[in-house]
Image (tube, rainbow, N blue to C red; front, side, top):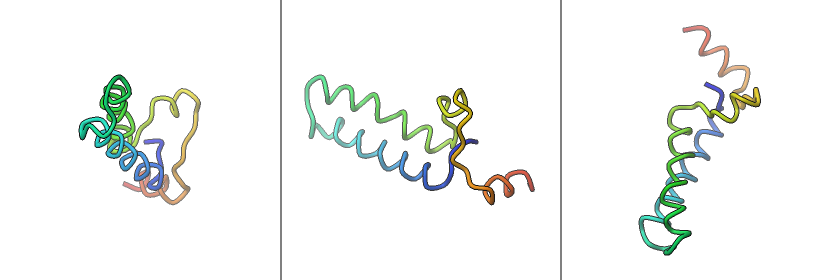
Length: 73
Protein backbone atom coordinates (compact mmCIF):
# COMPACT_ATOMS: atom_id res chain seq x y z
CA UNK A 1 0.00 0.00 0.00
CA UNK A 2 1.58 3.24 -1.09
CA UNK A 3 -1.37 5.64 -1.32
CA UNK A 4 -2.70 7.83 1.46
CA UNK A 5 -6.38 8.30 2.20
CA UNK A 6 -6.71 11.62 0.37
CA UNK A 7 -4.87 10.23 -2.65
CA UNK A 8 -7.19 7.22 -2.74
CA UNK A 9 -10.35 9.36 -2.51
CA UNK A 10 -9.16 11.66 -5.30
CA UNK A 11 -8.34 8.68 -7.52
CA UNK A 12 -11.71 6.99 -6.96
CA UNK A 13 -13.62 10.22 -7.67
CA UNK A 14 -11.50 10.95 -10.76
CA UNK A 15 -12.05 7.41 -12.03
CA UNK A 16 -15.81 7.66 -11.56
CA UNK A 17 -15.92 11.02 -13.33
CA UNK A 18 -13.88 9.73 -16.29
CA UNK A 19 -16.05 6.63 -16.58
CA UNK A 20 -19.24 8.69 -16.34
CA UNK A 21 -18.04 11.01 -19.09
CA UNK A 22 -17.15 8.10 -21.36
CA UNK A 23 -19.94 5.61 -20.64
CA UNK A 24 -22.57 8.34 -20.23
CA UNK A 25 -21.65 9.52 -23.73
CA UNK A 26 -21.05 13.06 -22.52
CA UNK A 27 -17.82 12.78 -24.48
CA UNK A 28 -18.09 10.77 -27.68
CA UNK A 29 -15.77 9.51 -30.37
CA UNK A 30 -12.20 8.53 -29.77
CA UNK A 31 -11.85 10.64 -26.64
CA UNK A 32 -14.96 9.02 -25.17
CA UNK A 33 -13.49 5.58 -25.80
CA UNK A 34 -10.21 6.61 -24.20
CA UNK A 35 -12.06 7.89 -21.12
CA UNK A 36 -13.97 4.59 -20.88
CA UNK A 37 -10.70 2.71 -20.66
CA UNK A 38 -8.54 5.15 -18.70
CA UNK A 39 -11.20 5.72 -16.05
CA UNK A 40 -10.59 2.25 -14.67
CA UNK A 41 -6.93 2.98 -13.85
CA UNK A 42 -7.43 5.60 -11.11
CA UNK A 43 -10.57 3.84 -9.90
CA UNK A 44 -8.81 0.51 -9.38
CA UNK A 45 -5.60 1.94 -7.94
CA UNK A 46 -7.66 4.04 -5.54
CA UNK A 47 -9.74 1.07 -4.44
CA UNK A 48 -6.78 -1.22 -3.80
CA UNK A 49 -4.51 1.53 -2.43
CA UNK A 50 -1.48 0.61 -4.50
CA UNK A 51 -0.06 2.39 -7.53
CA UNK A 52 2.53 0.55 -9.65
CA UNK A 53 4.12 3.82 -10.81
CA UNK A 54 4.54 4.94 -7.19
CA UNK A 55 6.17 1.58 -6.42
CA UNK A 56 8.67 1.93 -9.27
CA UNK A 57 9.51 5.51 -8.27
CA UNK A 58 9.60 4.64 -4.52
CA UNK A 59 6.88 7.20 -3.76
CA UNK A 60 4.36 6.91 -0.94
CA UNK A 61 1.61 9.36 -0.06
CA UNK A 62 0.70 7.57 3.15
CA UNK A 63 1.26 9.62 6.26
CA UNK A 64 3.18 8.36 9.27
CA UNK A 65 0.01 7.49 11.23
CA UNK A 66 -1.33 5.42 8.29
CA UNK A 67 1.95 3.49 8.08
CA UNK A 68 1.94 2.88 11.85
CA UNK A 69 -1.67 1.63 11.74
CA UNK A 70 -0.80 -0.94 9.07
CA UNK A 71 2.30 -2.22 10.86
CA UNK A 72 0.44 -2.45 14.19
CA UNK A 73 -1.95 -5.09 12.80
